[in-house]
Length: 173
Image (cartoon, rainbow, N blue to C red; front, side, top):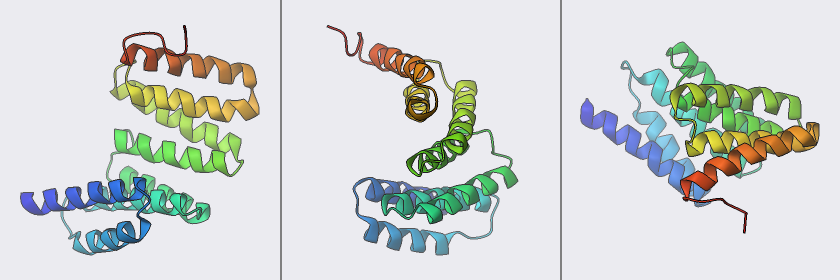
């Protein structure tokens, strides 16, 4: 079972890499194979959530935002059923969902999802973690449309974290 679990997780990670590289055809093939290999065990909902997140990222990459939203919501539903709605994977799905909403001009929905992602990340990670900075940056992008002063505040928070990560002040000099 452990090697089967590792194989599924490895396939999911390979799919993520293929999507990020823009190789959507191979990513979709691997996703379908991975989905078919998930058997009923205690991690089925978790694997299905990760697979749905990958489908969401794939569809977002293809500009199929309606399908991306459905898949990210499915991922969140599966994580909630698996009692993992407050873990980092849920934060990732919320961030993806928020960014799809932002890219489609649904700024209020984007803000809601991105705030939820930030809250989870703040509870699970040190305040200087790059994922918290990414959340601040994503919220800054939303607030650019809703409240430019608030956007500036979030960009400053992100910049401070990114600057500390590289050992200095970013953008100054």
